[in-house]
Figure (tube, one colour):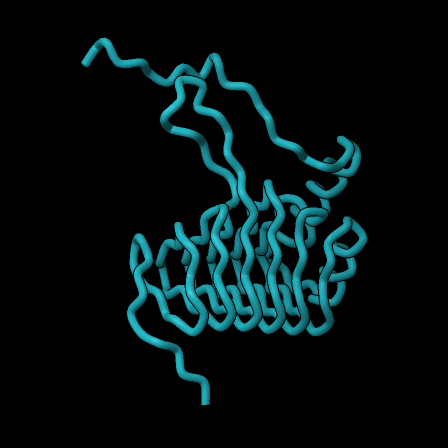
Amino acid sequence: MNHLKKVNNALYTVSIEIGASRLKQMAWYIINVVFFKSNLFIFSSFKVTLLRFFGARVGAGTVIKPAVNIKYPWKLEIGEHCWIGEKVWIDNLSEITIGNSVTISQGALLLTGSHDHSKETFDYISNRIVLEDGVWIGAKATVSGGVTCKSQSILGIGSVAEHNLDSYIIYKGNPAIPVITRMIY
């Protein structure tokens, strides 16, 4: 097995397209720490205003709870009447699009970035995430880059979505598998 190549982090280079100046990044870092990641109660409407100021597109009626971490607001689109729960981490190195009436429960993670484990250079990979209308991401669930959660799908508590979720299907587990059809009365 010694003849196989190994990962060499010395060869790794950062290839992330940030999409904002250093000054904007530093300003957002401070705003994110003080007003978003904080456990203090800060009005959701104020947080929405800050997100919009930094380039996010956020629809009316969106609620953002305490201790939410958002990497880059300029790569974020949130529809109307969405709910972003406590301690949600939106790690959006690529674009994330969230439709209308989406719920992202406490401690959930939207993770666009990863690495190519098959290459010696451990190349960075980042792909967008799309949460269509009516999606519910359960508490402490994870959605990986490149995934589209189609309309009205549910990702259960602690589950991991590495592939697209079909409309009106409830998924559970790691990796998430379909378990039941969602019925809305």
